[in-house]
Image (cartoon, rainbow, N blue to C red):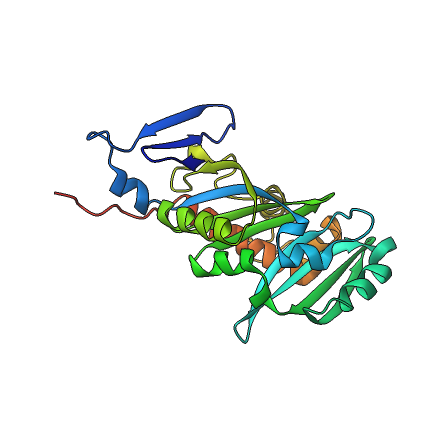
Length: 255
């Protein structure tokens, strides 16, 4: 999606259908559009933001951001890297001047979970996410590029985020934007693929039955991640599913 002086350009969730909205069309409710929450999937090169520069290496790595935990008003990212590069990765990241501490949390099935304490004030990209009240849903690096899925409280917030990135000279490429209040607009009602797979397996395996036939430890072993990561993934999945289905914000009465 992008804006010019008079039109809004965006694509539907299938990534193929392109729409153009005339913002001066009297029949189009731009106020209602501005109030609707949206989810944006976008890509950013690793050199464009501080966390990307902290985690970059001579050889491109695949890194998955598991979650961002607020700690004393500072977000602490937890991320997974492959075990065979974890030692050199930890040493290199720890030397970065913006990093206070990088700590190994656990190892499981060939992957290592790290927690990172860093100076987020130097990262204008994450600062922009925080300032507009957006929520980071998922993030993963592939080569030299990071793919983000971010929920914005409104189209206005998304526009402000884009302006902040432009002011900070951060180049972002938007792949897809959709309205999470419409279940048909997202392929899995706002769930990421790992969240959907985990939630479906939990239901099928009897995790939510009384008595339980499956534990988070069982799920962790199946998916090759920690018990804590499973619990967090299920929590985020339930929140996302609720927000995208039964918790639909009502538009104010314009009349």
